[in-house]
Length: 447
Image (cartoon, rainbow, N blue to C red; front, side):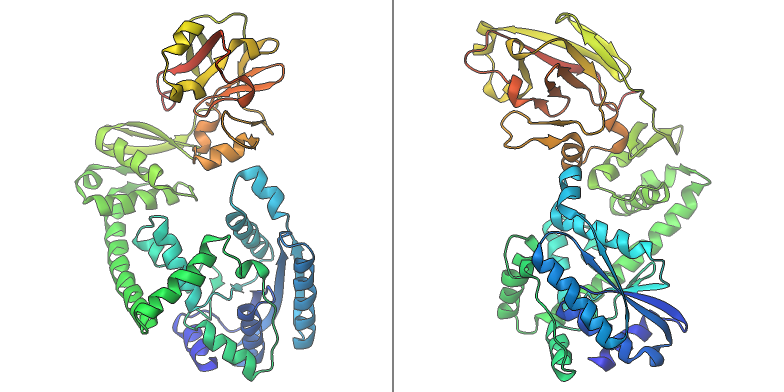
C-alpha cells in the first residue's frame, strides 16, 4: 500500500514541503491506516506537523465515547497531536430537516475547516469512490457528480483514493495496528451501506474484474468532463462581463453545455447548494426572459442580459382577518378566500382536502403573517410535527422565497402553510359544516 499511496500523493501534488496537515480520524480501519502512513512517511513527504481531528456526532452514545478514547490512545502511541470536537447531529438535523448522514457530513467538514490547516487529509479509498458513484447515480447525478470523490478539493486531500479496502486491511495487519468498527457501518438503515453490502458485491460477482472496469469508466468520464469544463469556460468567457452575462451565445449553445454554464454562473453568484430546479429556472428565463429568485438573489433576464441582485426584502407582517372576506392584501402578495358549505364539500374531491380549513376548529382570531424563527406545524395526514425550516429544506424551497410564503394562524398556532396545506388540527372531516380555502392571486415568483 505504501508505494501506491506515495505515488498518488506525488501524482496529484497533494503535499508540499512544510505543510501542516490535519487528519480526520474516526478510529476506523481507513483513518487509522492513513494516520499511521502519514506519521511513518512524514519526513519523506516534507510534512511539518500532523494533527488528528476526531468528531463525535452524538449519534451512537457510549460507543461514540469509546471511539474518541480509542482514537486518543492511538494518537498518544504515535506521538500525534489530538483534537476532539463534539457536535449534536440529531438536534441539528431535527432543526434543518436533513438526514443524519447529510447533517453529520456538513458539521464534520465545518469542524475540519475551523482549524485552518494547510491541508486536511481524509481517508476516502477506492471502495468509497465506487459507493459514492452509485449513491450519486441513484439520485440522478450529472457527469461531474458521477466522478464521485476528487483527489484534491481546495485544501482537502485524499491520499488513499487509489487504495482498496483490502489493501488497507493488509497494511494494518503488517504494521500490527488495531482499529474499531462503527456499528452503523454494519446495519442497512443507510443507503450507502446497502450499496456497500449488496450492490457492489453483486457487481463483482457479475464481473470479477469490476474494479478495473470501474476505473476505466471513471477515466472516460474524467476525460469527457474535462472537455465539457473547458468548453463551458470558453462559453462563459464570451458571455461574462463584470456581474452580468450576455445571453446570445448561451441561448444558442447546446442544452448540455448551457446547463453546465448556468451551474457555473450560480456558483459565481455564491449559490452553494445548486439543484436541477435552480438550473432549469435560470434556463427558462435565459430562453424566454423574466425574473427568478435563487437562494437570496434575484436573477433578471432583459434585453439580452442576465444580471443578479439582492432578492426583495419582505418585511415582517401580520394581517388580522375579522371575517372570511373575498380577498386580503399583504406585503408578500394578495390572497383570495373561498367559502364552502357542507353541501359544497360533498362535491369536492378528497384529494383537495389538504388545503381546506374547518372554520369551526379555528380558535380565536385568524391572522395571516410572515414566518418566525422556530415555527413548527403538524400538517394534515403527517405523523409528526416539523419545523418550517425542515419542511422548506425537504421541498428545496429557495431561501429567497421563504420570506414570501404566507402562514395562517389562530390563537393556538399555525392553521395553514402556503404550499404545504392545512394543519392536522384544523383539517376538514365528515362532520365539517363550513370550510375555507386560501390561495395566492398570482405567482410566488412575481414581484
